[in-house]
Image (cartoon, rainbow, N blue to C red; front, side, top):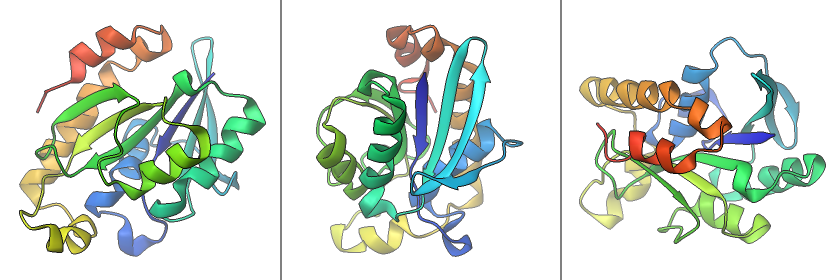
Length: 184
């Protein structure tokens, strides 16, 4: 069994924000799935061939994402190696993708919350949103919407990840990483 948790903030005013790229990713890849309120988030189940896939959008706001992840992890006894957190990354240019397990949270409060709750050895699908150039502008930047040309790059990024997801379910993480890392 696998968990894909897309990070974001609840509420329609945040729907298209850069910080909500995790929610947007799940909506893109699983557009017709029905979510229910569970595990401090919006939760859905899906079968991918023989593997059960849980989808989660934490509704705790970004900085408390770890609370929702811990609840679902403990309930289903999901190994951290099968947890994939999809999130925005300021240090990557718009649409760039990096996959990694563990490592620094890079100042991302959602990842810090998750690491505090379940440890640091989970998978991250980092999707670049660019940086405003000044650390004082970061908060308003991550809560801003993508420009049209940027959103087209993000959609291409989603498509590239989506067409290679089968590699995750076959546990070929290295091949998945090589196919999606550094793409635009």
